[in-house]
Amino acid sequence: MAGWTADRIPDQTGRTAVVTGANSGLGLVTATELARHGAHVVLAVRNTAAGEEAARRISGDVEVRELDLASLDSVRAFAAKLAADHPALDLLVNNAGLVLLGPRRTTADGFELHLGTNLLGHFALTGLLLDRLAAAREPRVVNLSSITHKNAHLDFDDLMSERDYRAASAYGRSKLATTVFGVELDRRLRAAGSPVVSALAHPGLTRTNLTPRAWEHRGRSGQLIARLGLLVTQSVEQGTLPQLRAATDPGVRGGQFFGPSGFFETRGRVTEARLSREAADPAVGERLWAAAEELTGVSYL
Image 1 (cartoon, rainbow, N blue to C red):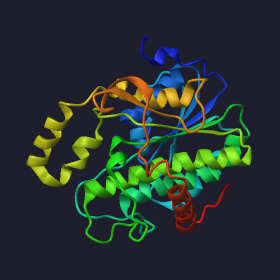
Image 2: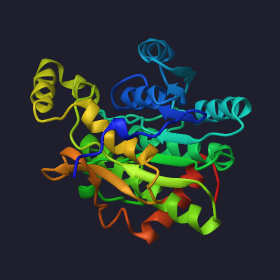
Image 3: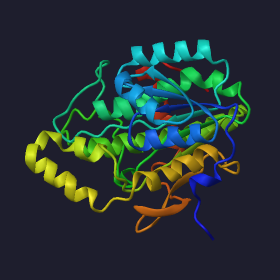
């Protein structure tokens, strides 16, 4: 059986898609393919100058809007303006991700930066846009996981990694939390009888600018480590296919999780991926959901 490719994306004409972190890497390829197939794509980016540059490289109907996932004020402002201009949203791709392997940092709201950006910003954004998604025909939310979630564990007594901080572990926990969120969102959407589908994807090991940025704090040695790491990655076009399938394949069911099929899910054609036991645990999902609602002040479902 031939692998799934972007050429299998159905016509997206008349659909409005929001892609976070759309100015580079996986987000840029996702936005480009959605626009190429006819969607109106909102590039939700922290750096609007970079977003405008990305928009010029995309052939299709796109707009650029400012969104800083590390600031709940920014998330709320973005969601309010978007909802005012778009009464229905067909697709939300929570693609943006951050990995910084230096010292511990915090968001504008005092959250550990990885968890605050990768999970809490997207949790708030999804909740604030859910009514606009529910107003669309066959709406969908896609959350971007990582293979690092499989070895991570959530410590609910130290969600903000204030004790014994290690950046790589904090990143893995943030991606586990994002994965738990996507799965728990599916459970709650089903229970509520919502038309919105929650799906997930991960890119394996993919050649994006996250790797070089992650090692910036190490100077020249960090640059060398980043270059060596890039040697074992697949192209960003290949790495984007799991989330494009999760976003557009008509047969996708709520809770499905897509990733690469080859070498421990690090590369290769798109297939259904496996969740870690913790990611699939309903008790963990319920506990994380309650924590996210309390931390963000956004309640839904």
